[in-house]
Image 1 (cartoon, rainbow, N blue to C red):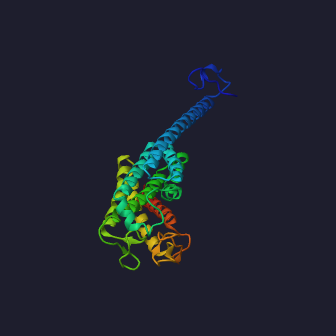
Image 2: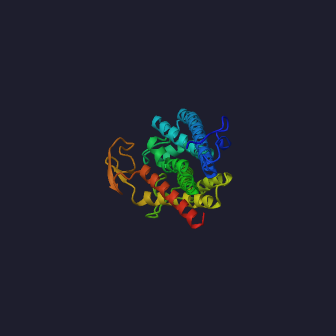
Image 3: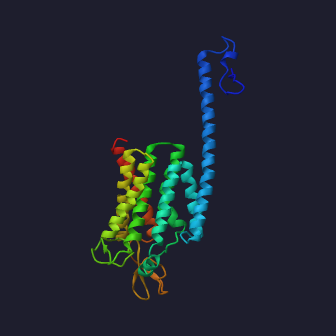
Length: 310
């Protein structure tokens, strides 16, 4: 027998049903279903509002970043999509991503001309982040945000924050370490290598790496996320950046210019000559390494979360 509802409350009007036509248990079950339906509808409306808010906010930030030459046109698309997903998952997620992006972009701009002079012949991409770079650094975070929308649970917080901390740690190490005096050393050969070389480390860069991971962990702490998520974020960020360095020194594709003979990550060297693979795994470029680093960061963070007993 269908449930009877009050005209304004939406709660079953059991009093209007004649005794004996419907049991008390049936009325309670009907009320619970009605309440659950209303909650789902309310949750859907809130999600739709956050999606719209995230789209507007991320679009504004992304286009401002484009004008500041921090993003390429394809990078704008990736940033808007990632920002929308983050805010849809909750404002904590959105603020975490926005703060990371703003600080990373600011660090990229600091000493940009000097960094370009030191790394132009080596690195494949400049300061403007394209779609692949955005996804390499934010895809794991974005997937965790989506998962948290449909399956709310603290492990997704750990995965997302750990992945973002790995990205921040690597970015801070690169942008600050490249400005440091002297040359870094390769962790594979321990020899000095040109600034910007994948797998190169320095004291300044290492300190910056830890600071980048700690920055994301501190934000998670401000959001009152579980203590195990905060510590997992810090450890995941450091582990992800270390993995990035190790992969960059060993498995990442290395190339040599056919004209001047210099080592580079470019397919066409700054001198205008083409390059060929001189080591590493073909196709395993810096973007792939960055993505794998965020996978390690998220994995270590959620692993610590589980070991810590949540």
